[in-house]
Structure formats: C-alpha cells, structure tokens
Image (cartoon, rainbow, N blue to C red; front, side, top):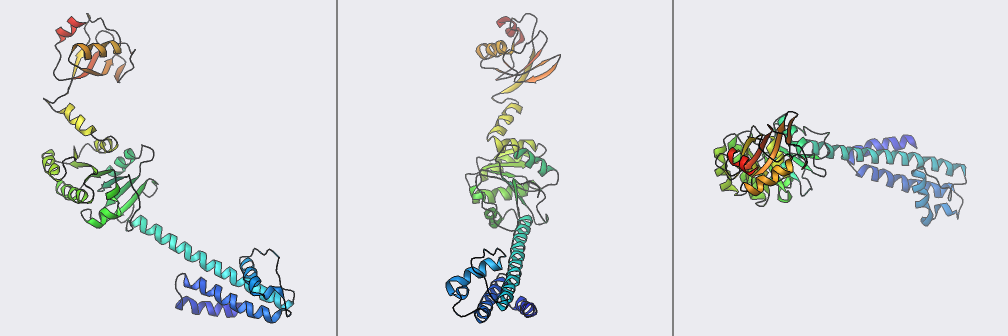
Length: 344
C-alpha cells in the first residue's frame, strides 16, 4: 500500500497543484480504505457503517484515535495502518501548502505589492535611507500609531521589516494604485518627503486626489514652493527639507508647523525675545514673572528661563528666577527693559 500511495503521489503532484493535491489524497485514501475495510471486517460490523466510518477515518488519519470504533481482524488492522499513513501524508501536504501560502503572502507584503486594509494611519511617501528611519521612529513614539511607508520601485523590499507598526507599499508614488494600496483614502495624515520639490508636488497632487481632507505635510528644499503646494491643497503644511523632525511633529500635532513658522518669522504675530532679570525686579519665581508678563505686557508669554544651572523650558510655577537670569518670551514686540523694571 505505501508503494502504491507513493506512485499515486508522484502522479498527483503533476496533475493536481496547490490545495487540490491534499484534498485528492484524502479522498482517495478514504474511498479505498472504506472498501478494503468492508472486505476485511466481518459482515454487519459497525465500523464500516456510513455513519461511523467517516468518524473513524478522521480520528485515525489525524492520529488521535479515540478508540470508540476499531477494526477486529488482522486485515482490518493493516487497513487501519494504511489510513494512518494516508492521514500523515495528507496532513504533511496540507501543512506544506499552508506554509507556502503564508510565506508567499509574507513575501508579497515585504515587497510591498499587496493592498493593505488599515485606517486612521500615517502614510509616509518617499524613502531616503537613514532619514526616513528617523522620521518613522519619531512617528511611532505615540502608542497605537500605524505607519504605511511608500517607496519607489528601486527599494526592493520593506527597509524596516522588524517594525511591527510599519507596513510597506512599493510603486510609483504619483499613481492612483499606490494611493489605493496604501489606503490614503482612509489615512489621517500624509507625510510627503520626495526626492526633489517637483516630485513632492506631483505626489501632493496624487494624495489630494485620493483624499482631499487628509492632513498633508510636505518637506521642500525651496520654501517658495509653499504657495504652489497650497494651490494644490490649501491646508498643506510645508516644512524645510533639512528639518525632518518637523515632519513628525506636524504629523502628530496638526498646525504645529504654522506655530513654528510664526515664531521664526520676523514681523510675525508672535516673535521670540529674551531679557535679563534686573536687580530691581521684585518677582522671584517663574509664576510671578509669567503673571506679570501676561497681565502688564500685552499678553506676553515666558517660555523658558536660563540660570547658572542651565536652560529650563516651561519650568514649574515655583522655579526660582534670580537676578541676572535670562527670560525667553513670546510677544508681539520686544519689551522695553525700563518698562519691565518699572512694572516690577
């Protein structure tokens, strides 16, 4: 019987690819063993009854063997051994095919050629070795953040396979099929980090077409391209390419880039300044300084304090502010030190 089964397997491998082979083997073994068992067992045996034999076949082929039904004759025992061998072969073929399917699926995911099923995620479009890893690391600091990394075809596989929170899609980043596979239509943020400003603009057009409501962040070399990008999508936030940390910060906290731009632009609505605490100042804690600045100086806000011990950003309310310490604050215009002394 094993020799016959081996010959049948060789023939079946050619004729029956994939899942058909284990199904065919199980069917052949079931039908042949049932007929042989009917010949080997005494007439009227409960084992070969249609309602019982399928159960005996399943538990025997799976090598479980509950013992509620079993052959009584020597020939029946031989048929039972045939069922066991056939069951082992069937399970081996089944698990081999399953492993192949899983391996192929994993390989396709690593190569970025399959569509994803995610939502409320961050899509990063563009890959630069080293740079993108840092951006993704900052994005995934927030628990529960899932990132879909999209790269061009010159990236053969997922460059971050060890990152469970990162999925990979490969292709032309300006094509609709890449937008669909990356689920841009259901993403909350799209971070565009193209190889040049022209590519960034082209990707932005594709993203806006797929999801006009997505929070879009784009890195550019030339900030003058900001107006062009906003023609594509008025809500796009643009950061300079050499400041990649702003990409992740803007992705996590929408609108933060606009705040930074206001703080860093001369003549903006809120500029950053500094002033040293004069000897005549009566306020000795950060809380007292913060209250005085906001109340007496047009809503100015103190951000940080520098003392001999170093810089402290957003210190606690009771942090001491000694004479000679430097206060860093945001205000519409620089405060007159004389007026500061007078108020103090």
